[in-house]
Image (tube, rainbow, N blue to C red):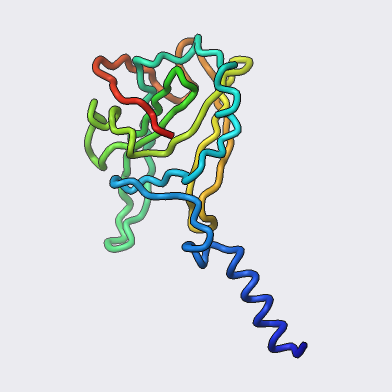
Length: 174
């Protein structure tokens, strides 16, 4: 086999194994709100749902975090403050969702009840730590499962403020 055919073969194999051809390897679908969901549930924490210790997580609360970042506006060159409000909502089934609000607006009950918008996953509590497994699509992949952990402080989660909310509804479908 000539070197040209070898280069073509190698480039073909690389492109088939990358996200360059998403119709062959796309492992997710996108909701009407632009959030990505796995086509097939491959969460490992999904298999251990029955062993969850739910005593720390309140299903009638959301956990809110406010981040502020200074950045230079590329159009004007002016340094501006950007504030992001995000939340996590937990379910007794071991599922959770993390989402963000609209820019420059407060999070509302509508945001918290919209289970079609945000990053989804499962959680498990172990030794005052909350272990997460979530699904995320990035420019470098066609959808992968990631793991993270955070500490539990009293009745809240480190870095988040617990807010009791009346009227939380919805059943997760992932």
